[in-house]
Length: 123
Image 1 (tube, rainbow, N blue to C red):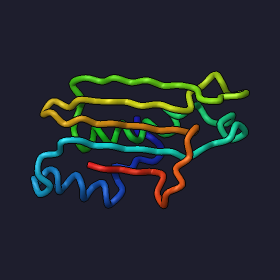
Image 2: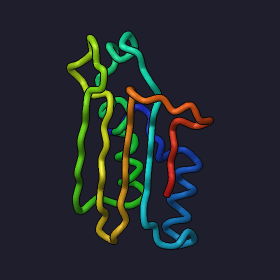
Image 3: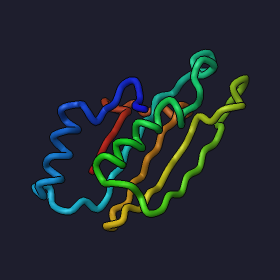
């Protein structure tokens, strides 16, 4: 089973995987993915929650680039949920990968990032 759209097939992700595999970027020590785009109640009512809607993409990117984690810690919350208080709109995951790198995956429909790129990725 694969998500309907999968970012590991994006040219930039494939290139990053290639550079990591070839050792041209050195040994990764951490990976971060952040998504912060506010979604009002009338939009969130139609969505399953931030974990299923967004964080799944962060997770498979971490698996693709750094491999399966040896440990995982995660939390989610509902911030000012209003009528949509039955599903999370903020979630964070920390993963430790076997060779030592850490991944921080964060997604929020509750916060708004007004920079030029509210979907941020670092490795």
